[in-house]
Image (cartoon, rainbow, N blue to C red):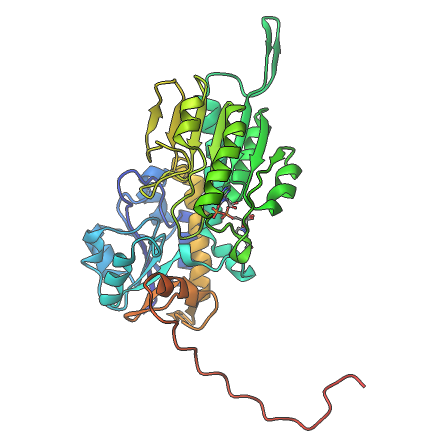
Amino acid sequence: MSLTIAALREAPGENRVALSPEVVRKLVKSEFQVLIEAGAGTRSFYPDAVYEQAGAKISERSAVIKDADVIATIGQPGADVVDQLTAGQTLLGLLRPLTDLDYVKELAAKKVNALAFELLPRTVSRAQTMDVLSSQASVAGYKAALVAADSFARYLPMMITAAGTAKPTKVLVLGTGVAGLQAIGTAKRLGAMVSGYDIRPASRGEVESLGATFLTTSVSATGEGGYARALTPEETAQQQAELADFIAQNDVIITTAQVPGRRPPLLVTQKSVDAAKAGTLFIDLAASELGGNVAGSQPGKTVTTPQQAQIVGAGDMASQLPASASDMFAKNVQAVLNAVVQNGKLVLDVDDEVVGELLATYQGDIISSRVREAMKLPPREPAKPAEAPAESTESKGVD
Ligand code: NAD
């Protein structure tokens, strides 16, 4: 029996779908069976008929859950799905493994295997095609700049007209990782005057190569693997105070700062929000239930302050460009499947440096070192070392 890969209709408010028709076609060609819940692609403008043409079978939800070996999902499936899952089934998606430990424990208790994209070791080069965080951040950054252009009350570019000259809008991007750089590039193409700021000094070159100005504060913090580390309370206060000036000088502030596995850092304090002039637009890509980069931002909502600044809680920007985001997400899913399927069988190698980290749970055990650390579990026993080759007496050096 060939492996059955499935995608479900996501929760309300999520427009993306984890498998695109293009990827379905490739999976079917590679002799997988593909099951798609009826209506799963509707909000990404992929009707059921397009999936059928690509070779998928369309079924109702409980049949899909029951018959799937692997369920690819954008967000964390709810209790209605988890309750139906049985031992040996595999989930692959953004499962919040570091911020919802109870969920991971529940999957482990049910012996459901969980591959969570958040856990991908992103600096391993063969993991790059699987990197959902990058692909979705890129979509989100692009869309954030478009939302800025659409929501701000003025032109972004300089406009010279017979009726006078409009000055270009000043856009500041806080956090210049994947999303921030895409927002900078897009805002530049729209004609804004753009600057970027990041706690990692290494991002200066990337920001400047896009033609934007790089701003710095006296706080810098590069942590593990080249990513930002969380700041101390003193560093946070220092950074917030220095950022306040930059914020006050700009019209649109797009914030994207994240620290892996932690609450997003607060970069724009309530004081800075209150000091913002009327019309200032904050677009907070970090806005989630865990908080955001801007004081008072609310996920999925636009808040207008008493001073007439607007704060867009834009944690769902990738979902607002659903077809492109789904296409890329599905390619990342396909790349993971390529890594874990051998001769038509699912082989989840807990000792593989990529798969072993992606695996939050496997056969009832917690595998990922990051999840184990978050659960305060001891490190996993290392795998038995491969048998050492017999010691050679021959010279190995260069004579
Ligand atoms: P991210 O989503 O975790 O964070 C977004 C940005 O917020 C980062 O640039 C981070 O430095 C910044 N940030 C965090 N705390 C901050 C603070 N207090 N103040 C200001 N900025 C803060 O990061 P990301 O976009 O996923 O990636 C970050 C970097 O890693 C990028 O340079 C990216 O190119 C690189 N990256 C490398 C690989 C790889 O090696 N394969 C893969 C993905 C990303």
